[in-house]
Image (cartoon, rainbow over all chains, first blue to last red; front, top):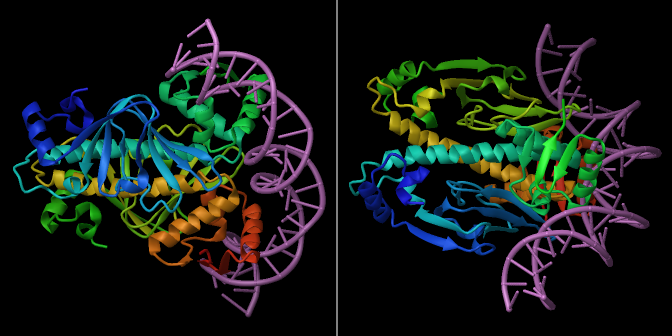
Amino acid sequence: MEIQNTELFKGISCEECQKMLSCFKSESRSYTAGELICNYADTEKYVGIVTHGSLNIIRTDENGNNSLLEHLGENGIFGKYIAYAAAAGDGIYVECDTPCEIVFIGSEHITKRCSNACECHSKVVENLFDIVTKKSVELSRHLYVLSSRTTRDKLLSYFRLMCEQYNNTEIALPFSTTALAEYLCVDRSAMTRELKKLKSEGIISMDKRKVTLNEK
Amino acid sequence: MEIQNTELFKGISCEECQKMLSCFKSESRSYTAGELICNYADTEKYVGIVTHGSLNIIRTDENGNNSLLEHLGENGIFGKYIAYAAAAGDGIYVECDTPCEIVFIGSEHITKRCSNACECHSKVVENLFDIVTKKSVELSRHLYVLSSRTTRDKLLSYFRLMCEQYNNTEIALPFSTTALAEYLCVDRSAMTRELKKLKSEGIISMDKRKVTLNEK
DNA sequence: ACAATACTGTTGCAAAAGCAACAAACAAAA
DNA sequence: TTTTGTTTGTTGCTTTTGCAACAGTATTGT
């Protein structure tokens, strides 16, 4: 995707866009599937914005359990300034999912207005507002799912949210069932057990990554 | 707090501030402890910003379990536009914690620039950016805590985050232990049991709502 | 000062979840 | 095409969690 077509630079002309990018001293980098983009602890001074592809933000706790904190697609944003600030000891990693391109911008450029003639700075802040708002909505959806006590209710909360979002009783999981277990922060085998129950009770149907909710 | 001293109107003069408030057709309301501020489902078209006191955002699931999704203090923001959009069926409520004052602003005023002479609109968007960013950080912290598999690890993750944030080994819980259980989305009795274990193992000490982490 | 309400601590029991380990299916790479 | 690695399904066993119920302690409002 061309940089001026990203949500971040929406409404800004091509020339102005280039001017800002150099003013911001931003850097763009590409990654291949599975590649480690960075350790979250290192994102102190910049934010990364996904202009292409997707990535995962993963926590590995002291017991070796992986949790999928976020799955960011195009226009997703990450960095300690935006989320997981002071996220204690254990490791949070940013990992490339599908081949992706990331624009890195020093966070000081976002907060402080630059001395150069960047009239469109406030337009960028407006765009960033939308991007961060979407992140906040996504985080709260995840939180909502995790607030369910049991694995069964986590699954149902997740499926219901997805169905509501796409206004359909059938949804396609955006990731593997292994990753789903990590997103729900539960044991994979226990989750599979629960999925089997839900299927046998006729509440859901599954075919590969297609899930149908048969409620109501 | 005077409205022009809130984070939302930071950097905007008193007169301009009043002009904007009427331009935004914003409304301010006060609530007493325990009072229901609104049902989250009703926040489709506006955002609420806490200018004084604190509130809780609570989910009650189909089994009657309460989860404390968020505890918002001054400059906290809520509304479907910002978080929990399409949060499925079950009830999310906004409830006054300590007596509070909320400014309600129609969300269309945030996204669209008004036709009136509100030059400081982009300043407000910049301020909102900071407010939403803080919310996003808070949500991700909560998510981080909930990503721990066991009650024990949830407690420890939470304590460690708090200690890191206040740069101290002793912290004061911002709410009751009952509310803590709801924040961690676990059973209160099971949590109490686990707290007892942590105390007997010497990992933590507790005195009322003061918790000391004795690690390392 | 009293009543009403909320919070805390406790326990036995049942249900759910986590763990470990393995086999089968699938996908990607050599 | 074979090999390698990842994903999925499964199951016994153990531990943790949730639930229900109750009593004692704070706290709040009248």
